[in-house]
Image (cartoon, rainbow, N blue to C red):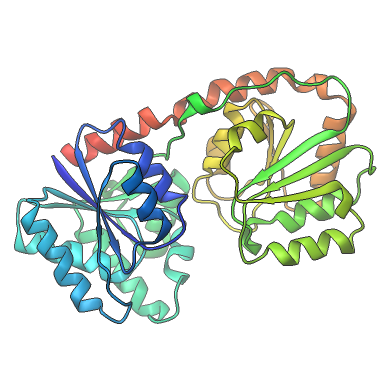
Length: 359
């Protein structure tokens, strides 16, 4: 089948990286249309050999983007449209393509909790966006949620029928991640990988670390975002800047994970999935995570990781102290994490998405 995925311009990573890997395992011919200018994500996909369409229109040219997508669907004889971005325009355009070409199937993705999904952007009011999302999820052949948590939010917040939602977990290329030999002594090597926005809760980790002995750890922060400066300032304010290293965006994440002991992710929001958590599990790290959103679907508390009962810095600090004092007690947990990560492979993701599109 010929499938087109609708995205927007932006930095490469997240959904775009997942789809770039997906084409290596999919049985379909996958095309990618980027609304507006394209950006680094489109550049990387083209370099990877993907067929990419760039709308090359200013954001004010919404109707032209709509017409261009419909034209591509007709010229390429597209059989399925998968809408990944939350932009209402893309979702309505996909349904218009279905109306014009009855053979086209439409699948609307929810890559985050429904509350977050509807709350993004400022040009369209929340009430209008909720109605658009409710309508497009219902009228699509299937709504797709990246976790049971996201599915439940679609049902509760938008009233999407549960039997109309397919849950397809995201996947990681697990072959890139290998557990390294752990050192029996030395400071605890703690790592975070992800966007630096306030909702991701890195500030909680910094406050927790300020309660540990300065000799007990080193904290590596991988990723970038608008909240980075505030986090760096907080590290100085807490007196732990010499123990924290902000690396920015990196391409050697597998190697960085292999050199760590503990992965920490305590978000303030309901995490839709958590691909970085899966990668950390595949690397044999002790994952210490919050209990919101989909994280309990990835980490089994006390078995393949640690789920905190709350997001208080004191609670996180206590968990890290326990690990630092007796790291040998967590070897079984490390091995189970590697085992559990296998269910979130890119092969499993590609197989499930392909089957859904074909069904």
